[in-house]
Length: 509
Image (cartoon, rainbow, N blue to C red; front, side, top):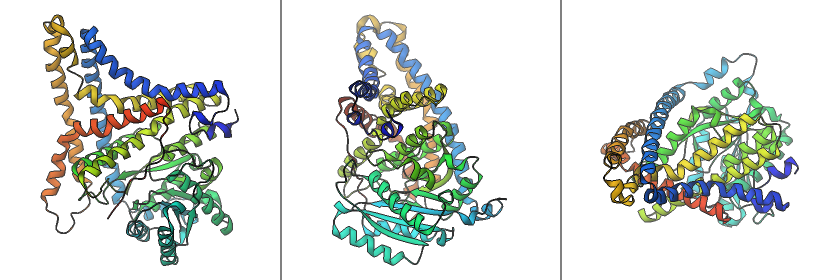
């Protein structure tokens, strides 16, 4: 199979060769088989061999206690770096770089939109206006979906006229509906916006090496020094054209009015990203990120998948035979937490968003199949990436259930012979003590979550901050309902070949 062929795979249906298609299907089944196999195995073996399961649960709890302390350390270090980066004058830092002229660097901002309100888009655009980076070096491409309807298309072109004199270039384009081979969603819209940006860049005679493309969610707000910080990372990177650049996502746009579980879920996501920033060898692109224009156009942005943000990294990694990485930027971008008109609908939307993110498990078969096709990537790199992917999605689907829900199964199912043993007596004592120690990680998250909050809006009680601190007591519940369940849902769908489409998270003001 040619490289361009396997890079374009969205799922097993795209493979014509029957043998290779069956192999890809096996890889698609792997995440679900591991996760459901673990949970069913704990249930069955708690009845058949409760002693061994009890030992497994105790060992698992100790393992995760170690991971919690390890992650908490990274979380603290990551937060300290973010705090330092947010205070720094990055324009001043750019002027200190010798041998490279930062004023040669242009930034293209892709803003794919569907049915988001004009107010939401304006807030994102206004954050670009407030940027400290010279606006004559910023190009904005606002790409609205044709299927959104005439109302939203007219709004996009109206905004293009309003902001046309603010930036170097501002264009509004319409992504055609029902394009063959595309999946309706952010990825296909971003790919189209990138093609339009390429035409513009070529017309202006700009060098691809001097252009960075920031692919933003439509609700993304850039803090004032984002483009200066990104430029600094690009100019100081050893091999800048073999890297993507990943800032830290926070969900502060509407944090004060979001429901408590939406805040916990979004804050947990922010802290996980901070942790991953500290483990850059395991980092992939996520949500709003930046790509060198040369990479964007050479590799081709994915237009046929749900999780385009991670897929563009893996496409580039395979395209460049493993010579590609993600550079962690310790600078924040702000987005929306899930919020709708009522709590019940917010619960449903939060679950759907998490399931869409959990569909990232589809990267496991894509990467495993790609590694078989690409013989130029060292085996050690392949093994490391596969382990990271499989462990990450297995843990997402099973860890919270094993820690908080299934630890008592040997006692309930083990029968009278097991229940009179010393191990049966000590199991709940040991697991409860381990979980008590693990509360340190939750306490750290609670404290840091209040430290990255934006200023209190007028009319909001100061008690709100204390309430946000206390909301972390619900973490075990949210980890199961909005973590394990949607992850298992996504993996079951992939295992059964019930492929997902892109679901757009509702945004409102």
